[in-house]
Image 1 (cartoon, rainbow, N blue to C red):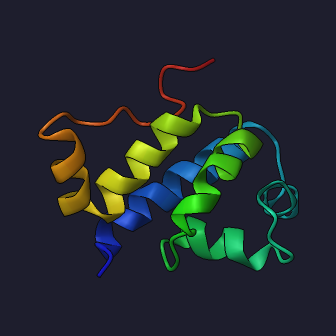
Image 2: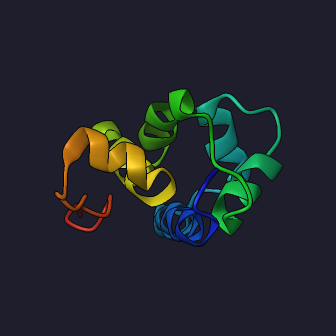
Amino acid sequence: MLNETLCATFGATIRARRIALGLTQQTVAAAVGWTRAEMVSLVESGDRMPNLNRIPKLAKGLVLDPAALCRFALAECYPALYETLFGDAAPVTPGSAEK
């Protein structure tokens, strides 16, 4: 089961990046391959987590490093899986060091 509190942090990060880039939810949805902007809204609110296979497209649409966004998503929403794969190393919040 997803860690809903931490997935809200993932969603807030996605929302902040989208707004910083001046993108609409519809634009991001189209970049990911979703037919409705509602999915972006659900991700941003922390109510849904995108399929992990969609995260690289989400990263591309938000001009983020795909590997960093994947690691962040795993750490936030699947902490046991993240720890199994990467140990105790904390992921960098995507976009935090990018300009």
